[in-house]
Image 1 (spheres, rainbow, N blue to C red):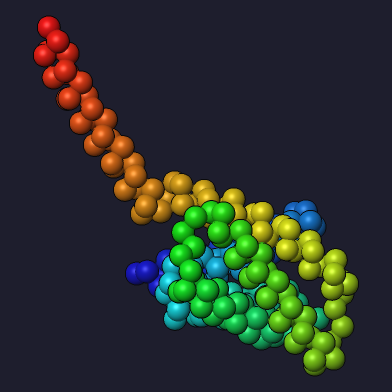
Image 2 (cartoon, rainbow, N blue to C red; image 1 turned 90 degrees about the horizontal axis):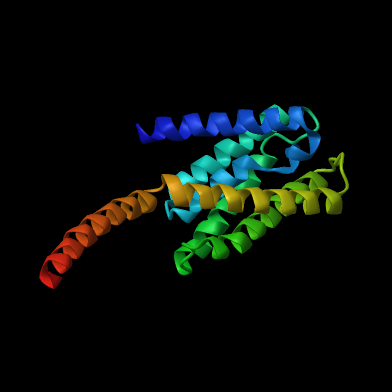
Length: 185
């Protein structure tokens, strides 16, 4: 069941990424598939992160059209997933502030490997390297930080537990404050 959910989320992310590019061209610099890959790599599930990275990269290569090398995105996202997993395994990256440099590093790694593969095989890029890299770095880092923060704050298991404990604390305070008032009288 979890694999079906991941596949559905991956399909939605790839479709949304191509739709955002069609709606407004600057939104094309936000790499939603990379954010999904980074999320799974930060969950410390290596096989799942690698499979999601390969599938997301191949899907974006397939959708992006003929000038792109089929497989370059899959390789770059798989390598990025491994790099993020390697870092997350050794350093605790559970806060939003620590995820900002991870997202930025993942974006740099993904783009440099992708462009490097194109150059190595003699393919021309339609956009200059520095321009594409800087726009994608800024857009993906900002959007990824916001999306991961919202997910952690409202939808994750940690947020669910925090809400449950908040209710328990309120109930406990309410019952103890009532006892304190009775003792004062």
